[in-house]
Image: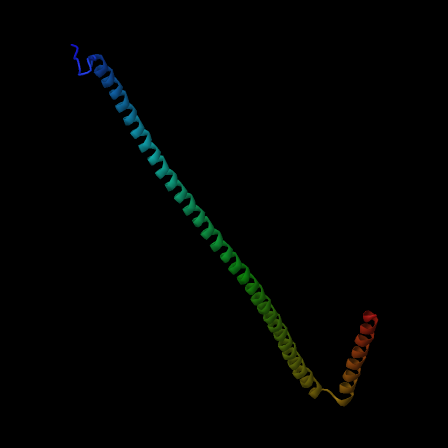
Length: 150
């Protein structure tokens, strides 16, 4: 069927080819819309990915900052702990020395009591002989001390 227009042209074959061209254009348009939607989706995914990366960077920075703060606190506590330990060790050393000195003087007092009790039973000559022996022992210790100190 051929239709004649006012210009005496045949419209039939042109209309069919126009319809074919129109359907191709519609396919191209639908493909273009699909590509545009895909690009918009990709753009959104890229923005989300950038936001995720930025969030991760922020999180890592916060973790590193808190880690550094904790390390500074640990170092400060370690220095404080070492000072405290040195102080306690010094006090313990002093306490042990004081205990040893107190024990020594207690022993001296006990020995003095024993010696004084023994001296009371001795005669004057025996007492003088004991004092002489003690003085000789003291002299020998001092003489040996001088030898070892050189």
